[in-house]
Image (cartoon, rainbow, N blue to C red; front, side, top):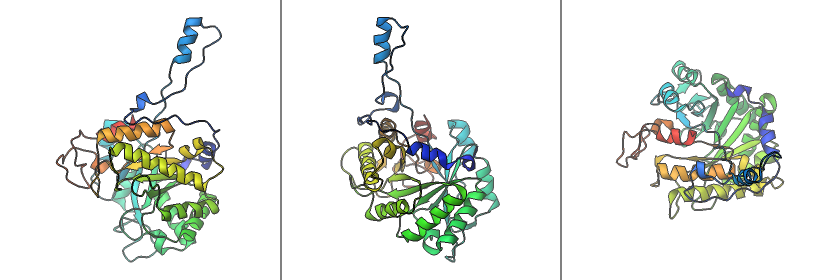
Length: 343
């Protein structure tokens, strides 16, 4: 089932959850040990059974996972990953403008949006497909298109992937008014689920000022979004897993400053997190232990989703600290991070 079948109503339902106190996060807690809600005893149970039922903890569900996959390079064997891990949903990257810098959607600026090889890779995905635009390199469609042109370009990319979930990864300056108008037009016409993926600042700074400004713009335009905190390549002291969790918590506070009428539970539900597995570009290293800490936080807080960059790197082919697009740089078995996040 592809995300074309996902109605915006699902997002609105998540946003309408009633308020409740979020469970506290304990650094290093695994998902199976996340804080939980006690069950109430049935009327027919004995006194001892009632006491037992009242104290029994229900294990919180881990958030949905859709790791990023670079579908341009072809270095990830999607069929093999799915068979080995059971992971079916993926965020496919990246759609940007063409090399000439026109409002023409392409894969990584090098392949036409309808490229046969990429379409064949997309067809191997058994689950939902999320189309990611922007990223760290290339010319952004968001920088060269008009609002109407950008909405059309988004639609073309979604159609090729048989998807109705767009992930807009903004790491450079854009015209917020153009992006917001395009997203509003797209969502109104297609009921598209929209995620904004934004980098975090150092420590517990939360989102950058540019990221918060974009959120305010889309909120003013009436666009329903989820927000994906990129917990990678930032400076922090101490344990890296705990630092990523703290950075994500700071983003929750940013969301609270924009969507002031939402409860904590609603804000956590519209928030996701994306670490870079293994060696990061700027020095930090996300180990499996760090990832487990972050997943424990995401589970305990009821985050809406988890992603990571990327399944192309989820192997132990370079365990010597190498920074590579095709391996993590840490000692791990193949697909170890995917298996961890997928539960």
